[in-house]
Image (spheres, one colour):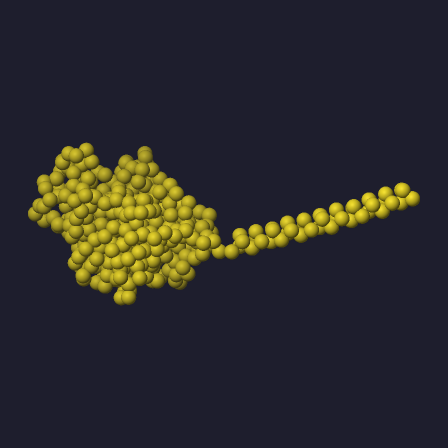
Length: 400
């Protein structure tokens, strides 16, 4: 009898244990299901509010963890392409998902200021899926030069990659590659570049350093370029006497191309470059050497046959990236020009009355980052990338 009672008691205990285990398993399954549901839910993107003279601006971090991003292109589906200077091209989906690096990117010279630079969509991107990339291209014996390639954008890689333009000759040195790309809507593409920190090259018409270049979109030289037919000049040149042009944009109101370039210590400037004109570097400048000494070649801030800057900063903000904000009459930012500022760690907004610059404010000082590129979306929002080891893609919602 005692044995029967013992067996009954043991069976009851085992039954209770089984029930408890099943209950715990049910709780764990419910917890796992809840965790999975939470992970699948859209994550709230980090935001902060910054001040502006027109009211508060909401800044949203769309993606972080980019290594020195240099340029951002806005895709028609609401996504983005972002270049990272070490040589990576990333796709960011409209929901903020960051892709692995895309394959097929040309080999870049990722030293000093060199690397993978600008990315823009071809005018016929909607049908061709073609993009343009600027980069520092390696050459013999440690030399490098600005280059532009075209490619077809695929889901995970580029295809049909072709070098569209090469700066010649290639030079040794780590600095001043430019480089921005803009289409003028008339079948031409403009490409900026630097003088590779070799100052005299900006004045030499048989070299492409320190020049704004204009080509047809098929890579040929337009017949009406200003130096076509001259044996002592490169036919690709549109204007010359530039230092390091890291900003370029087309004014959609007028069709004029605007560029901005770094001065040395002081003298960053905006120009509206005209065919064949000489913009003076290094003969005329508002800056001095970083050592505090005068630029050896400089004669002052003006000289015969050389253009004055359209707008100049005596203290260099370190300009990079440029975008017009127009055709948004309900926005307080309408008719503005945005420029990234590296040294100043801000986004510069210039107010415009036609071509006239009427005012300036500096945004994003609270973010404390170097602003490398800026683009304006069709939605009236402004997108920037920060040049940091942990670089970010940010969206700015204009003040109401």
